[in-house]
Length: 480
Image (cartoon, rainbow, N blue to C red):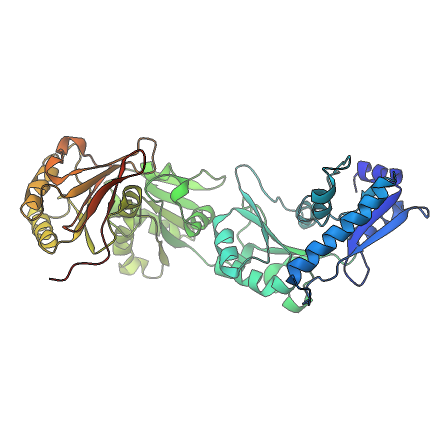
């Protein structure tokens, strides 16, 4: 307890505290040494905790009625001129029962909220390990969340505390395991109180877990490798088309867990710098060498994240890594590929829904395949009336491909066919606009631009007060 909390109890006429039906109150037990015989005690006993109720409003209705009655009891003391101290374990405004009184009384009576030590801080102190350090992100989660949601949150964060265990413990443990974080996880029960227990989360018997316990993922900075963790591996991750908003929780988790991050420097710059994590940037044209380097690190026991823009399996690093990993020398190195938001999906979402029906994805780069192959595929896709997502349309050394592709497509499509020109989607210089196929200007297209060419069914309409155009392709195709 803080000195101010002790002082406030000493100044109070009435001491109130919440409890379950059994009448025992952890908050009261913490403050017991500071209670006087002349204190008026108000035990605010919950009508239900985890059991069912026949209240007409259900569980929530029963609690709302209780909060109103409890607030009225405290208001009666306040109206009589008495000072009321409401006890709350931990911090009053942190998952605390007091906040329900505060919402109902603070606008009518002078109120002081005295902060307390949360179970989060107490648990970290009892574990004797840093909870969060430097630029790490701490996530606090209620164990009552669905297991899949817990899994996603645990995978995406650096450090975490999961509260409200008890009956939720099996699902919480499952989430730690599914997110790959179980070997790091610690357990703290009744921190700073009688019956305190700490240990590895994986070793805890689910039947022994009370409500007042927490699961902790401590700081990874300078942390030893968990004994239950396997050896090295390579995870190929997609960073999406731009910055952190486009990362999936699974990708965030893999990047946070990596010992080494390998990638093209432009994509590497999208990944947050973490203490103790080695970064290996390289040029965009050394994909095989980059893949071999990552696999060599993994062979030495490192967890390696190979970063790629967009989705790693779409004209990106997953193929390069898997091609090298298929060699006998790397046959025993685990390789995983985690999906990302593709440039085509990002551009389509900005424009509307041009990929709403069948579409083809084609790279216009002839660096790894002849232009004749590209032209043949463009003709085939165009004659099939597919929407086209065109990657790698042009660069400083490739200036004629866009014009050639436009002319070829005009042999199969109307000049009025909508074409979305999406550049730097999600980035600071984002530009998404729509033009007629006949009006596509190769000079306005570079390597950071993606083109989406509509089919005969694709619609380009103006809507809203600003007249902003949207492009969409109907899901139903007309019968012949």
